[in-house]
Length: 457
Image (cartoon, rainbow, N blue to C red; front, side):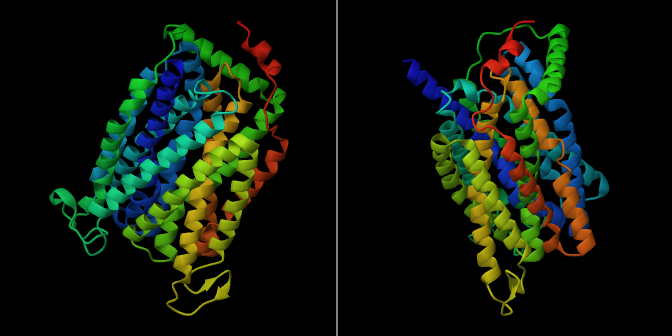
């Protein structure tokens, strides 16, 4: 009976990944971001700049408050009330993107960027609180498999959502969907209503599919009432944790390492669609097909990565994925419509498209497995009795320097006057993260290292 109940909790936790994945797949990467830069902003260059500054600003908000909220939540016990609130922000932010009309005026542009940022806050904070539940779903050896399978399940959800968008809603330049249909529900292709519906579609997807999570993943009995004393204690404990970080060298090295390689991965996700549209001249529908490929391979990569994690540990998976992504970035920098690997090709050749599709598959497989094994590694590195706070610090490390990838890409693009060379800084970010993993203990700190800190004050 207990085993069946825990299996249901695991499935409920996986359904959260399924529910929230379209925000990343549809909005951040493959549909809305390229549409915003190409059609909503005044021009692609300013669109890319606005998108980068928005990610920087709201990433900073997430970074500042993530560990604070995690510390408070660890002292109050229940996470469901928090998750209801983050879910509301997710839904409101996604729905607000409906008003992203082509050639929007300045006020509408600001509204769209703010709406996206609000939804992103709901997404990121929700992930912090649900990641903290991971250690309660299985023993140490099973966590990697559970995490990898959950990420694969989320990729499957994102893939299905993307397929629905491309087949029935998102229109191309001719005003029809991928299979030649007019957008459903009488949506006006001239006003790009099919593509704009990606916001409400993402919100509704979340509302429907997050239900199993709230039904099956219950909180333990409340540990403390939520009041000002709890807030003060949470902030005090957070301050102590940060001060003790130098004593936990493996945890500190991992947080810094993940800062660099996750920022590099976010750079790929944020600018991948924009790069394909600018360098290869792909339409929104073509970028979406690219996303289908990346997500499909990503599902397989996550599943394999989870089992590799269980057998060899998360660090081996993380290293393999980072090396793969470095190679992918080198290939991307070396190609455009006139050459591949710096070797000239015939005009009109489809080789750049084929190579970029292969790169998309590698990004999908490596990116998903990297993120899944990264949260498994965080479970090994963090204080087991303060796991929400640990994932708050993990979110901080992922967002504290989130301006690096957008800023470096913008700087490199400006200096080189080349969108292709503009992504080259991602190679350096991945390389730094890889080197810093040398100081990370595969099994994390021994339990005795946390005993004094876990003792009641």
